[in-house]
Length: 292
Ligand SMILES: NC(=O)C1=CN([C@@H]2O[C@H](COP(=O)(O)OP(=O)(O)OC[C@H]3O[C@@H](n4cnc5c(N)ncnc54)[C@H](OP(=O)(O)O)[C@@H]3O)[C@@H](O)[C@H]2O)C=CC1
Ligand SMILES: Nc1nc(=O)c2c([nH]1)NC[C@@H]1CN(c3ccc(C(=O)N[C@@H](CCC(=O)O)C(=O)O)cc3)C=[N+]21
Ligand SMILES: [Mg+2]
Image (cartoon, rainbow, N blue to C red; front, side, top):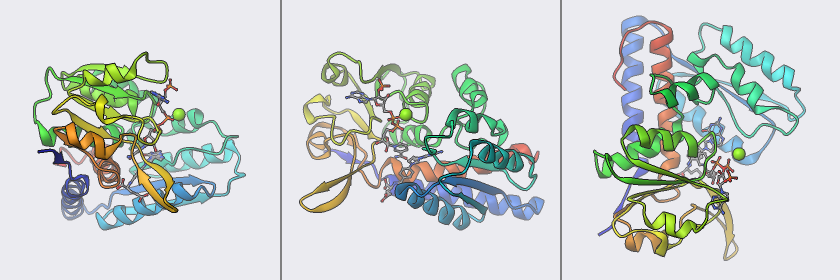
């Protein structure tokens, strides 16, 4: 039998832990952790995500500060806002929603975020810490993906992990986290030869590509853990629907465990963002160790 990994339920438990840490911080130290989200432009999908983050942040007991800037905002103005948030002692976490409009360098903007407030874990400092095995803020989607895999098998040591996709936001940090779990990691991408054969070797198969149902059922090894990061909006029989990068129905026939889309990795991303914000608040404000 295939286990359908319930990302929504697991995310709810991560969010509960974050909420009780927030309550604890409030009662013991009288401070309310705060997350600032910066959204530039009117991309509909980004607006939905930012809205969801806002609701989840407030539900956890933290303060949510939204900065919505028009599409034509200059790079310098976005950088100026990030610097202002860096200097604001009440702000614990800063998230700049990606993608940014084309005239703005996301690399420049992201690296202006103070590493201790970088709850997305995307700055050079946090990416460096991850690769060096030092403590830092870990990107949310990869973090959530590994939590989900570990609900199936707590010990991932020695397993063959294949990560399809090598983006800075997902694929690369996910490969690093799986390596830290002592997996044997293969990173596949658009130039990989015979992707099907590479995938068939995977005990843990992670797809972070952005192509609907790229990964076919017969690319999945029997009993494998399949983590589908992809979020693709497609039109099917006249209706819009969300599908992953994995051909879910076919893959579920062979996988040992699989994440659905929606209800898999997506909710974990937001839960881990709350977790990172609590961790950032505790570290920055010198509140000692918090359990999240
Ligand atoms: N669930 C969640 O919370 C999140 C979901 N996502 C979703 O995850 C997916 C990936 O996002 P992201 O990493 O930002 O995407 P990017 O577009 O930044 O990266 C896509 C990666 O896929 C690789 N790729 C493209 N085509 C192929 C192919 N035919 N075969 C193998 N590899 C290929 C690219 O390779 P190359 O480097 O060679 O170009 C690249 O490394 C998207 O569907 C996105 O919506 C993203 C963030 C969070
Ligand atoms: N700086 C930055 N950090 C990000 O982490 C980031 C980003 N930019 N830009 C866009 C991507 C995408 N992303 C998602 C978050 C939640 C869901 C999510 O909650 N998904 C629900 C469904 C939501 C729906 O119905 O659309 C689910 O899969 O069940 C999906 C995708 C974060 N991203
Ligand atoms: Mg990219």
